[in-house]
Length: 269
Image 1 (spheres, rainbow, N blue to C red):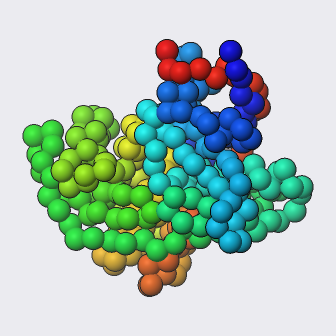
Image 2: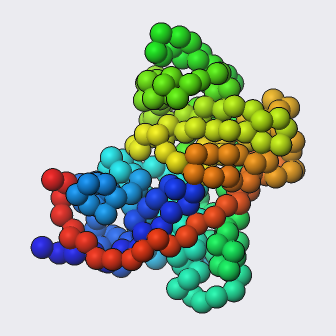
């Protein structure tokens, strides 16, 4: 049986298995699911596969496989983890890196000493609100594209509500390819409490692109300022998001190495 060397990273509790080298180019969704299994594998929300960049100016190419074997276009917390991983390999000191993703290049400013990464997340595209029925009630969702699809709702929701309707909203006909759903509670203009049902993962400790989506909708509605960092509090901790009037978005938050190891590489049991 083959094995794979990996590094386990987390960003606000959103955890990932980072793999580079030959195994990264050949890993199958079944193998990724087996690695992400929290009882029989390493355990993670997803696998981050690193390879040579093909875009001019990029330092590394990132391919993502979620815990269920699906392949998202982008992952904000994952990009921060990759930036820290690559910067660690190159030595100490502040670093500027570009991570190539399926949603386009993401420039990252890395502060290894502080364990912080600020990412240029590109443009946030906010759509018009839609109403989706789930769990015996109607939900007002605002679609947002942050390189991957999101649905943001400011409707009041309990933890039981979110557990009950998260999957239904994420897979509704409004989102043909599925979406991450953000349930938001405003804390005033300074920030928001957010719980995310993540496509391919379920309830998660944090979601970087989700935090960007929430801030973009809030700024468009006048609930948050443009050009000013806004705190988005997730179950795993806070991210600070700045949305410009042209839609460009920056995300700042932590990422850290948890451990390294070697695991058997096999298809899902």
